[in-house]
Length: 199
Image (cartoon, rainbow, N blue to C red; front, side, top):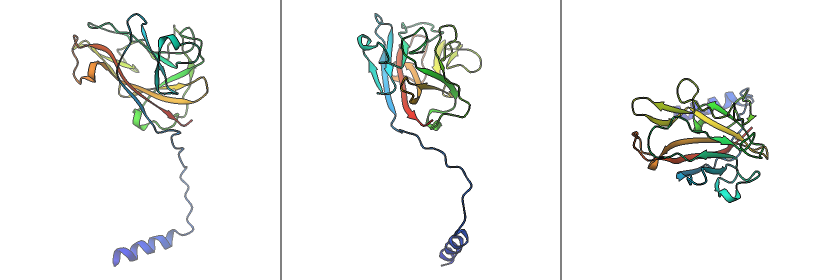
């Protein structure tokens, strides 16, 4: 009985109260496209991916604005120290895709963070950084095991040619996403996910 009275009193006191907290926009589309063990054909050299459709684009159809981001073929096995993830713009393709790498967790990114600067890709200044050692890297190089792991704290934001924004994260580059790969583990099997977010 005491709890019911307390609740009724709280409701009565709050009648007419106004909220001053800003309402955060919700994600445009919470559907996440997930892909596992996707490997590029060595003769083609790339995996072409459309974040808008959430699908892999066949190489023969990867012209114009059909794709948004591409991931390179990685020869197994051995020491891989750079992975050139590229957007369809600049010298990489004829599209107008822009991107930005932000610090955060994929599941927590629902809107474009304030201050995010999108830009076209460029060979001499790629959106996704090539270095794998130091701060602000997209892939982390483990010196002890000579393996690469995508940073769990980096998310690639992609603004497509149509102006929509998607978040993308590569979660593993090893076959079956084994948790503790070695230098001899089959590499070049991309595991990644993407979803549209609000602007």
